[in-house]
Length: 251
Image 1 (spheres, rainbow, N blue to C red):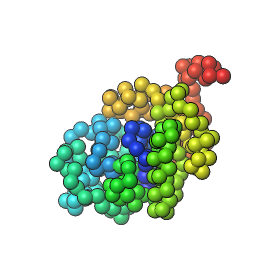
Image 2: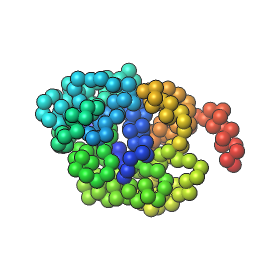
Image 3: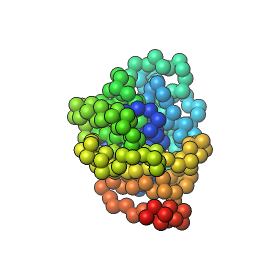
Image 4: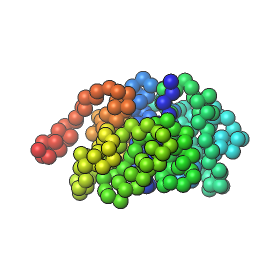
């Protein structure tokens, strides 16, 4: 059965799209059939993370009823299928609609469909949430962002979605909120803690997910840990020498 997972956040800038691209590849590396869908109609950039810059058909065309889903899906060398949103400013007026049934009809061979949802709580976000069966919350461990994510959690519950857990993203040393406090605040497990790291920005600039660009990097390892949690599997982290040095000095 296809699992449709919405990756959501309360506000922008928390690295949600970067997580979607890397999580999709990580699941594919575990032997799963994966598609990623850019449902952020007014802020599209998921395709760019995979090096898709120009493409004739997008989710905007599907939303308009002018194209079939199969025409808007592009295969990445990693094995992940990508359904990008249009980068054209002329497509900003497209009305969002729930295409869940079309996804199920056309991507029924997939084990996972990851939906990169829009941020905020407007109609675009609600439509994207309505397309999902499960939700993964992405947030930064600072109070304003946590507060926005909590509102998103409330809406997801209202839509009767199963919330998998929380990924803390772009974490740095100055962040004071701890994993245990955030878990208790949301009453949800924190399933991943991903550090702020320049290597992520470099991989985005290279238009290649970091789990491909640098598979042994601590960021890649953490994303793979999230993928394995979703799969219900244990994951053994493989630390490189730099990460072992960091761990030593953190003791």
